Every structure is written in structure tokens, then in C-alpha cells.
Length: 336
Image 1 (tube, rainbow, N blue to C red):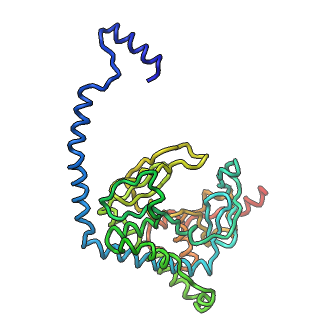
Image 2 (tube, rainbow, N blue to C red; image 1 turned 90 degrees about the vertical axis):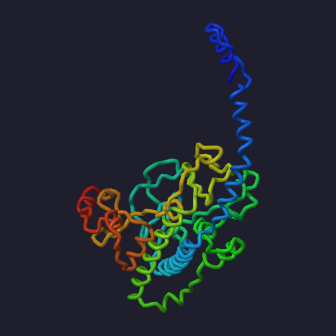
């Protein structure tokens, strides 16, 4: 409290016959003493709760997630060799196709402007399957990670950390598992040996694995707690978030300090990365004037559809507008 506020408060309290004191009251002291007494009991409850994990009935679900994730990474790597994926040089926009669209949605802080055209460069698998990492915990009953301890813990994919806590991976083998399985090596000769007609089966397998991973994560998140920052989308797999002050480390972000944790969902661990989806009735290059006609789809789903896979999920069909009208190019030519 500033000096002038104290002065005003003293005059107001003396006028109303109240006493002003900056010392903590007896009630606050008694509450602090009560918290000190029950702190060991809270710590024992946390340690005892960790003894119940991993739950044996959920271990097969975690193992199925690892198999589906490995299948997804392999199939997407194969599809990226056959179908090009582009990303914007200045923002996080991604497009599946040989030529990027002309929709003015680039809002990068580097260019200091809104609604500009994208500058397209070749993309990678991380642009389709966005990597989400978290701190690797040795056990669920360990203390909260402090800001000074942020370099003492390894960063691993959040899905692997969740499966590790579920009992599918040993805690000491998770780093080796990530190095071996997260980078599938597929040569160009292997791609040439695959007939063009069989690529649709590769896309169908990738789409099925994508749905299996998301369905399995939805089950695991009901049992194992995970947190996500409301502001910067930092993910922490564990009963409570860490205290590393990494929220708002960039100059253009307004938050400076600790994270604001809330319950994490499937989209926080496996982001969908929604992109503009080009349908068969759309022109070769999507124009800005027809943005209300075009549909959207997750980057993985759009890549699988380009390979010839059929989408059975109605939610994706509603976003893609498969039977919707396309923007007439005659209007675009007359304007240009």
C-alpha cells in the first residue's frame, strides 16, 4: 500500500473510530499455523495417491496409443514424400498442395501488418503434426518443478510422457524411445516402390491411426491429470503444473511470469492444425474473394484426403463443405 493511501486510510479510520494497523491479525496467524500443521498430511496424501498409479486396466490403452502414434508418423512421412505441404515463412499457416493459396490471412508480428499474402516455403512433418513437449517427471509424487530447476528436467513429447505415467514406457527409457520412434527413416526408393493406387490405403491407415490416437488420449485424460496454460498453451503432464516462469518470454506477448493452469484436453496434446482445404470443385489456386466458399480441415485429414482416403467423421465433413458451392472465377476475372 502506497504512502498516500495509508494516510487516507488513517484519517478515515480515525473519523469512524476504527484502529489502523499494518500487522497481521490474530485470525491470519491462526490460519497460517493451521496450514503448517496440515501440510505434512497433504504431502502424505499426495504420496499415497501416487502409489495407486499406474492403473493396470489402463496400460493396454496407453500401449495402443503408442502403436497408433508410430503408425501415424510412418504413414504421414510416406505421404509427405508424395504430396507437397507448404508453410508460411512468417506465420504458422500451412497448406496442402503444390501451390499456396492467395487468401490474405498472414498476421505475423515480424511483418508489422495484418491481412497480407503468405510467402510459402516447403513444410515438414512438424507442420502437419505439431509437436507438443512437456517436462519428464521421474514419478507423480515428486515436488513441483521450480524455475531454477527447469534445466534439470528433460523435455519429451507430451503424448509419450502421458503414456509413460500410464505404465506403457519405463521412465528411464523414454528418451531412447523418442529418439528411435519419432524419426522414421523412409528413403525415396521405398516411395517409388509403392504404386500410386496404393497411396490411398496409406492415407486411410494414417487417418485411422489419427482417430485412434485422439480416442485413446481422451480415455487417458479421464484418469491421469494434465494441465495446460490458458495463455501460452504450455502443457504439463502431472497432478499440478510447474513453476517455471516461461509464460510470455517473447516481446510481443504481454504476460511475464507464471503460467495460468487449467485442465488439458485432447486438442492441447494433439493440436488439429486447421488449414484451408481445396475441394475438387475449387480452382487450382484459392483466391481471397472466395474465402467464404472454401472449407477447412485438419492438416492430417487434408493430406489423407489428397491421397484418396475417405472421411467417415461427420465433424470433418461439416468443416470441409464437400458438397458446397465454389467461388465463380468469372467474378474474380472481372474484378482483376
